[in-house]
Amino acid sequence: MVPQVDQLVRALSKLPGLGRRSAERAALALLRKPETLSDPLVEALQTARRDICCCPVCGGFTARDRVPCALCVDPARDSSRLCVVEEPADIAIIERSGGFNGRYHALMGKLSPARQSGPSELRLSQLTERAPAFSEVLLALSTDMEGDATAAYIQELLRPFRITLTRLAYGLPADSGVGYSDPLTLKRAIAGRTTLEAPHA
Image (cartoon, rainbow, N blue to C red; front, side, top):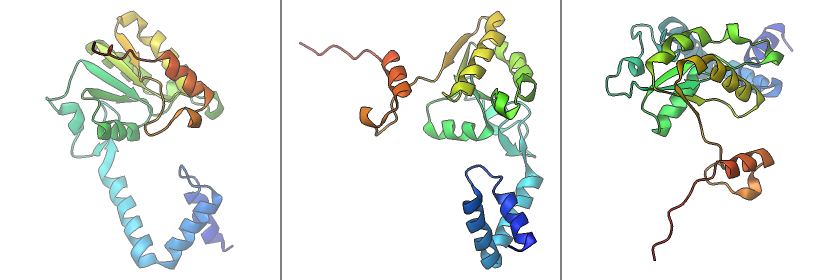
């Protein structure tokens, strides 16, 4: 492979979700159609690098000329509840669900010894500064071991503030069933079961 092409493949393969083969396909597509693929991509990346930043308050993505971000300054949002997420992208996902109307705080990762990500790499000091202003802190973190460890760490961190700390409910995915679920998901779904209304006589 031409060294410049290999360099492009290696750069693309660093993106989440792109392995070596996927990166090769993407690189070859970009090289085959530079006018319709490469040029617009380069322009979009340059624009994003120039105009997008992380909100200093919540950590979510925002335009450099809108700091703090729109979610942080919106007076219609519930300022008594704070949702803690791992990454800025998680904020957009939760917003699309329409299930939360409070404020956000992105940690920029989670505790992970394997990736050498400790407490100092996360936005935990900013969280302890903000948390006392809220009556509830919702942890919208992964349900893997690293997410659980991060949740436990935050629980201890916020314990002195006597804030109501909640976590996303565990359960079966929408449009799924028992036969498609792993044992841990099922166990958590059973533990977090809800009571249905009694049938009318």
